[in-house]
Amino acid sequence: MKEFDFYIVPTPIGNLGDITSRALEVLNTVDIIACEDMRVTQKLLNHFSIGTKCISYHKFNEKERITKFLEILKSGKKMALVSDAGTPLFCDPGAILVKELREAGINITALPGANAAVTLISQIPRDSEEFAFVGFLPKSKSQIIDLLNKYKNIDMVFYESPNRLIATLKIIAETFPGRKVSIGRELTKVFEEIITDNAENILEHFSENILKGEIAGMVHRLVDQSSAWEFQDKIKSLKSKNFSDKDISIIISTLYNINKNEIYSYLTELKK
Image (cartoon, rainbow, N blue to C red):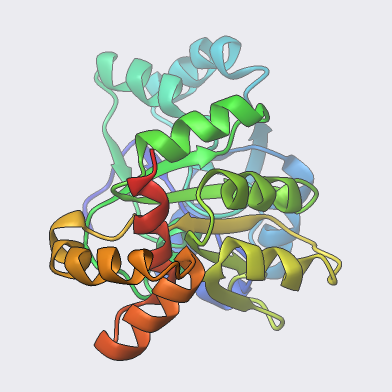
Protein backbone atom coordinates (compact mmCIF):
# COMPACT_ATOMS: atom_id res chain seq x y z
CA MET A 1 0.00 0.00 0.00
CA LYS A 2 1.36 3.41 -0.99
CA GLU A 3 2.30 5.57 1.97
CA PHE A 4 1.21 9.17 2.37
CA ASP A 5 2.12 11.92 4.82
CA PHE A 6 -1.41 13.00 5.72
CA TYR A 7 -4.56 10.87 5.77
CA ILE A 8 -8.18 12.06 5.86
CA VAL A 9 -10.02 9.27 7.66
CA PRO A 10 -13.82 8.88 7.93
CA THR A 11 -15.18 7.47 11.18
CA PRO A 12 -18.55 5.78 11.83
CA ILE A 13 -21.65 7.96 12.05
CA GLY A 14 -23.22 5.61 14.58
CA ASN A 15 -22.42 1.94 14.12
CA LEU A 16 -18.78 1.28 15.03
CA GLY A 17 -18.80 -1.77 12.77
CA ASP A 18 -18.84 0.55 9.75
CA ILE A 19 -15.21 1.58 10.15
CA THR A 20 -12.97 0.05 7.48
CA SER A 21 -9.93 -2.15 8.10
CA ARG A 22 -7.81 0.38 6.21
CA ALA A 23 -9.01 3.21 8.45
CA LEU A 24 -8.04 1.17 11.52
CA GLU A 25 -4.63 0.42 10.01
CA VAL A 26 -3.99 4.10 9.28
CA LEU A 27 -5.12 5.28 12.72
CA ASN A 28 -2.91 2.64 14.31
CA THR A 29 0.22 3.44 12.31
CA VAL A 30 0.30 7.24 11.96
CA ASP A 31 2.21 9.21 14.59
CA ILE A 32 -0.53 11.71 15.43
CA ILE A 33 -4.30 11.98 14.92
CA ALA A 34 -5.82 15.45 14.56
CA CYS A 35 -9.37 15.30 15.89
CA GLU A 36 -12.35 17.55 16.45
CA ASP A 37 -13.12 16.45 20.01
CA MET A 38 -10.41 14.40 21.70
CA ARG A 39 -12.90 12.79 24.10
CA VAL A 40 -15.05 11.47 21.24
CA THR A 41 -12.09 10.20 19.23
CA GLN A 42 -10.50 8.60 22.29
CA LYS A 43 -13.62 6.49 22.83
CA LEU A 44 -13.30 5.21 19.26
CA LEU A 45 -9.60 4.50 19.64
CA ASN A 46 -10.10 2.75 22.98
CA HIS A 47 -12.78 0.54 21.45
CA PHE A 48 -10.29 -0.70 18.85
CA SER A 49 -7.28 -0.69 21.24
CA ILE A 50 -5.45 2.02 19.32
CA GLY A 51 -2.93 4.04 21.33
CA THR A 52 -1.99 6.74 18.80
CA LYS A 53 -1.51 10.23 20.24
CA CYS A 54 -4.28 12.75 19.53
CA ILE A 55 -4.15 16.52 19.12
CA SER A 56 -7.17 18.83 18.92
CA TYR A 57 -8.14 20.46 15.66
CA HIS A 58 -11.46 22.31 15.40
CA LYS A 59 -12.98 25.42 13.85
CA PHE A 60 -11.73 27.65 16.68
CA ASN A 61 -8.05 26.73 16.33
CA GLU A 62 -7.69 25.48 12.75
CA LYS A 63 -5.63 28.42 11.50
CA GLU A 64 -3.17 28.40 14.40
CA ARG A 65 -2.69 24.62 14.12
CA ILE A 66 -1.46 24.78 10.52
CA THR A 67 2.09 25.87 11.44
CA LYS A 68 2.36 23.16 14.09
CA PHE A 69 1.09 20.45 11.73
CA LEU A 70 3.52 21.53 9.02
CA GLU A 71 6.38 21.24 11.51
CA ILE A 72 5.26 17.75 12.49
CA LEU A 73 4.88 16.57 8.89
CA LYS A 74 8.14 18.08 7.69
CA SER A 75 9.96 16.31 10.52
CA GLY A 76 9.02 13.04 8.83
CA LYS A 77 6.05 12.07 10.95
CA LYS A 78 2.68 11.03 9.56
CA MET A 79 -0.73 12.34 10.57
CA ALA A 80 -4.41 11.53 10.17
CA LEU A 81 -7.41 13.86 10.36
CA VAL A 82 -10.75 12.66 11.74
CA SER A 83 -13.99 14.36 12.70
CA ASP A 84 -16.33 13.27 15.49
CA ALA A 85 -18.38 11.24 13.01
CA GLY A 86 -18.43 10.77 9.26
CA THR A 87 -16.10 12.15 6.61
CA PRO A 88 -13.93 15.15 7.52
CA LEU A 89 -14.51 18.40 5.57
CA PHE A 90 -18.25 17.58 5.24
CA CYS A 91 -19.64 20.27 7.55
CA ASP A 92 -16.48 19.87 9.62
CA PRO A 93 -13.20 21.82 9.68
CA GLY A 94 -10.33 20.79 7.43
CA ALA A 95 -10.62 22.70 4.16
CA ILE A 96 -8.18 25.42 5.22
CA LEU A 97 -5.72 22.84 6.50
CA VAL A 98 -5.83 20.72 3.34
CA LYS A 99 -5.32 23.80 1.17
CA GLU A 100 -2.24 24.87 3.13
CA LEU A 101 -0.77 21.37 3.25
CA ARG A 102 -1.14 20.86 -0.49
CA GLU A 103 0.47 24.22 -1.19
CA ALA A 104 3.34 23.13 1.07
CA GLY A 105 3.79 19.95 -0.99
CA ILE A 106 2.49 17.52 1.64
CA ASN A 107 1.40 14.16 0.20
CA ILE A 108 -2.30 13.78 1.09
CA THR A 109 -4.91 11.09 0.54
CA ALA A 110 -8.51 10.55 1.66
CA LEU A 111 -10.04 7.22 2.61
CA PRO A 112 -13.62 6.39 1.59
CA GLY A 113 -16.07 5.80 4.39
CA ALA A 114 -19.14 6.81 6.34
CA ASN A 115 -21.10 9.90 5.33
CA ALA A 116 -24.59 10.76 6.57
CA ALA A 117 -25.70 12.52 3.37
CA VAL A 118 -24.73 9.59 1.15
CA THR A 119 -26.18 7.08 3.63
CA LEU A 120 -29.52 8.88 3.43
CA ILE A 121 -29.86 9.40 -0.32
CA SER A 122 -28.71 5.88 -1.15
CA GLN A 123 -31.89 4.49 0.40
CA ILE A 124 -34.63 6.90 -0.67
CA PRO A 125 -36.42 7.19 -4.04
CA ARG A 126 -35.09 9.93 -6.33
CA ASP A 127 -36.07 10.94 -9.85
CA SER A 128 -32.61 12.21 -10.78
CA GLU A 129 -28.95 11.58 -9.92
CA GLU A 130 -28.45 15.32 -9.51
CA PHE A 131 -28.62 16.84 -6.04
CA ALA A 132 -27.29 19.83 -4.09
CA PHE A 133 -25.70 19.37 -0.68
CA VAL A 134 -26.07 22.54 1.43
CA GLY A 135 -24.73 21.29 4.76
CA PHE A 136 -26.41 22.52 7.94
CA LEU A 137 -29.33 24.81 7.19
CA PRO A 138 -29.03 28.45 8.29
CA LYS A 139 -30.94 29.57 11.36
CA SER A 140 -32.73 32.43 9.63
CA LYS A 141 -36.16 31.65 8.17
CA SER A 142 -35.55 33.95 5.22
CA GLN A 143 -32.25 32.23 4.45
CA ILE A 144 -33.90 28.80 4.51
CA ILE A 145 -36.64 30.07 2.17
CA ASP A 146 -33.94 31.46 -0.15
CA LEU A 147 -32.34 28.00 -0.32
CA LEU A 148 -35.69 26.30 -0.96
CA ASN A 149 -36.34 28.62 -3.88
CA LYS A 150 -32.79 28.38 -5.20
CA TYR A 151 -32.88 24.59 -5.28
CA LYS A 152 -36.57 24.03 -5.98
CA ASN A 153 -35.80 22.16 -9.21
CA ILE A 154 -33.11 19.91 -7.72
CA ASP A 155 -33.05 17.56 -4.73
CA MET A 156 -31.62 19.53 -1.79
CA VAL A 157 -29.76 17.48 0.82
CA PHE A 158 -29.16 19.04 4.22
CA TYR A 159 -28.20 18.43 7.84
CA GLU A 160 -30.26 19.69 10.76
CA SER A 161 -30.17 19.51 14.54
CA PRO A 162 -33.04 17.70 16.30
CA ASN A 163 -34.12 20.77 18.25
CA ARG A 164 -34.60 22.76 15.03
CA LEU A 165 -36.17 20.10 12.78
CA ILE A 166 -39.78 20.96 13.66
CA ALA A 167 -39.26 24.65 12.86
CA THR A 168 -37.54 23.75 9.60
CA LEU A 169 -40.37 21.44 8.52
CA LYS A 170 -42.88 24.23 9.25
CA ILE A 171 -40.93 26.58 6.98
CA ILE A 172 -40.86 23.99 4.19
CA ALA A 173 -44.60 23.32 4.55
CA GLU A 174 -45.41 27.04 4.51
CA THR A 175 -43.15 27.79 1.54
CA PHE A 176 -44.08 24.80 -0.63
CA PRO A 177 -47.26 23.07 0.65
CA GLY A 178 -47.24 19.39 -0.16
CA ARG A 179 -43.50 19.35 -0.89
CA LYS A 180 -42.02 15.87 -0.59
CA VAL A 181 -39.31 15.52 2.05
CA SER A 182 -37.16 12.65 3.29
CA ILE A 183 -35.80 12.64 6.84
CA GLY A 184 -33.27 10.21 8.29
CA ARG A 185 -32.43 10.00 11.96
CA GLU A 186 -30.26 7.68 14.03
CA LEU A 187 -28.66 6.53 10.76
CA THR A 188 -26.85 3.16 11.04
CA LYS A 189 -28.00 2.80 14.65
CA VAL A 190 -30.49 0.38 16.22
CA PHE A 191 -33.40 2.85 16.04
CA GLU A 192 -32.66 4.16 12.55
CA GLU A 193 -35.72 5.74 10.94
CA ILE A 194 -36.19 6.95 7.36
CA ILE A 195 -39.44 8.65 6.45
CA THR A 196 -40.51 10.08 3.08
CA ASP A 197 -43.74 12.04 2.86
CA ASN A 198 -44.96 15.58 2.42
CA ALA A 199 -43.62 18.10 4.92
CA GLU A 200 -46.98 18.42 6.68
CA ASN A 201 -47.27 14.70 7.45
CA ILE A 202 -43.65 14.43 8.57
CA LEU A 203 -44.17 17.45 10.81
CA GLU A 204 -47.13 15.72 12.44
CA HIS A 205 -45.12 12.50 12.82
CA PHE A 206 -42.14 14.09 14.54
CA SER A 207 -44.15 16.48 16.68
CA GLU A 208 -45.14 13.43 18.72
CA ASN A 209 -41.58 12.10 19.07
CA ILE A 210 -38.53 13.10 21.11
CA LEU A 211 -35.76 13.68 18.61
CA LYS A 212 -32.11 12.89 19.32
CA GLY A 213 -28.94 12.96 17.26
CA GLU A 214 -28.17 14.85 14.09
CA ILE A 215 -30.68 14.73 11.24
CA ALA A 216 -29.99 14.18 7.55
CA GLY A 217 -32.73 15.29 5.20
CA MET A 218 -33.64 15.90 1.58
CA VAL A 219 -36.22 18.26 0.12
CA HIS A 220 -37.29 16.60 -3.13
CA ARG A 221 -37.29 18.67 -6.27
CA LEU A 222 -40.56 19.96 -7.66
CA VAL A 223 -42.15 17.80 -10.32
CA ASP A 224 -40.59 18.39 -13.73
CA GLN A 225 -42.89 20.87 -15.46
CA SER A 226 -42.29 19.24 -18.82
CA SER A 227 -43.63 15.94 -17.50
CA ALA A 228 -46.60 17.70 -15.88
CA TRP A 229 -47.45 19.57 -19.09
CA GLU A 230 -49.57 16.72 -20.36
CA PHE A 231 -51.93 17.18 -17.42
CA GLN A 232 -52.58 20.88 -17.96
CA ASP A 233 -55.82 20.43 -19.92
CA LYS A 234 -57.09 18.01 -17.32
CA ILE A 235 -56.08 20.38 -14.51
CA LYS A 236 -57.88 23.29 -16.21
CA SER A 237 -60.96 21.15 -16.67
CA LEU A 238 -61.01 20.14 -13.00
CA LYS A 239 -60.41 23.72 -11.89
CA SER A 240 -63.37 24.85 -13.99
CA LYS A 241 -65.48 22.44 -11.93
CA ASN A 242 -64.21 24.18 -8.76
CA PHE A 243 -62.15 21.27 -7.52
CA SER A 244 -59.53 22.31 -4.96
CA ASP A 245 -55.81 21.82 -5.60
CA LYS A 246 -55.82 19.01 -3.05
CA ASP A 247 -58.69 17.24 -4.80
CA ILE A 248 -57.07 17.72 -8.21
CA SER A 249 -53.83 16.22 -6.88
CA ILE A 250 -55.66 13.15 -5.61
CA ILE A 251 -57.65 12.71 -8.85
CA ILE A 252 -54.62 13.04 -11.18
CA SER A 253 -52.56 10.83 -8.90
CA THR A 254 -55.22 8.11 -8.83
CA LEU A 255 -55.92 8.13 -12.58
CA TYR A 256 -52.34 8.40 -13.86
CA ASN A 257 -50.23 6.89 -11.07
CA ILE A 258 -48.45 10.20 -10.38
CA ASN A 259 -47.26 11.18 -6.90
CA LYS A 260 -50.03 13.42 -5.53
CA ASN A 261 -47.54 15.55 -3.58
CA GLU A 262 -45.64 16.36 -6.76
CA ILE A 263 -48.85 17.40 -8.52
CA TYR A 264 -49.81 19.55 -5.54
CA SER A 265 -46.37 21.18 -5.54
CA TYR A 266 -46.73 21.83 -9.26
CA LEU A 267 -50.14 23.45 -8.75
CA THR A 268 -48.67 25.62 -6.01
CA GLU A 269 -45.84 26.66 -8.31
CA LEU A 270 -48.31 27.70 -11.03
CA LYS A 271 -49.79 30.30 -8.69
CA LYS A 272 -46.46 32.13 -8.31
